Amino acid sequence: MSAPNLSKFLTPNPLGVRELNFRALGTKCHVKIRLESERQALQFAADTLDWIKNFEEKYSRYLDTSLVSKINEAAGQSWIETDDDAERLLNVADEVFRKSDGILDATMLPLAKIWDWKKIHQQLPTEDNIQEALRLTGWDKVERREGAIFLPEKGMGLDFGGFGKELAVDALIEISRRHNIEDVLIDLGRDIYACGGNGEHEFWHIGIEDGKNPGNCLASLAINDRAVSSSGTYARHFMHNNKRYGHIIDPHSGWPTSNGVNSVSVIAKSCLEAGIHSTICYILGVDEGLNFSSKFHEVDVCIQSDQGMEGNPQFERWLVKEDNNKGN
Image 1 (spheres, rainbow, N blue to C red):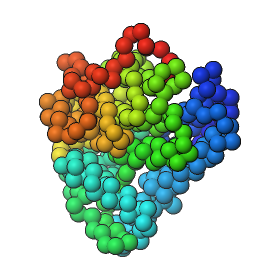
Image 2: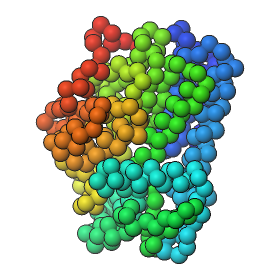
Image 3: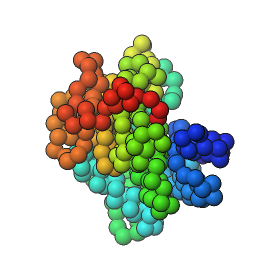
Image 4: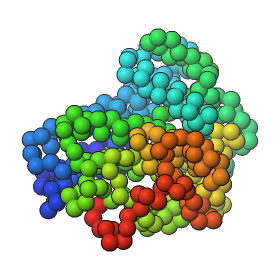
């Protein structure tokens, strides 16, 4: 976790918005609040940064001392004790796996490693590599008992990156509520929750990035008391023989998802819910993805594909009208 930039937090903009910027959980993080009291704002910032630091230190697979790394290191060898907080996270992993019909699986680490988008790939994984990684995945293989967890085969591994940021966003919103902050926007790598407004409107503007042209805003949303999560591979991918391979892996084939979908944006009542559906829709594709999300109440979906934009009718109610399209 990087040191936060407090300059924009200590000096609010003309609309009274304080902005806290830092890097954590492998991404850029932005927290915006409207709050007059500097003392109260600093206490909220301290609680926010403390929560993120503890979460990352405990659950990041990239830190050798984290609980997740200890669980992964003990795969096929021994049980690892878990406290109440870890039990709650493991219960979320189980819920996500069940709700997604197995598409979102916290045991996908073996596949994530062979398709690591951060590395230069001189050659692609072989089918044998993929099948061996698939053999080591499957949340239903994980063994749990009260206060402990065991990965039964050496080489298995947990990675909560599929829903960790979304869970963190929801947790930070709860912290803001305990501080009685009404106007707040939490943005952890484009997993977002917004409450109240930006001082100019009774909502926050959130841009939808163009999945084909990263950096360009395709549309703007007016969001209050809702989460927005977007899934796409325009930022996390590697190139091989002029073909792009993204970081979102199809758990059935073991290959990076390639179905003509460029990006998915979902609006829901929690960031965890929005993130679940954005990833599922990305993997399933336009028709199956929209059909899956249609079974859930108040989950509004927009999918950008090679054929254009498609979504459910409810998504349109969040689009900003042109005369209000300013600020953020």
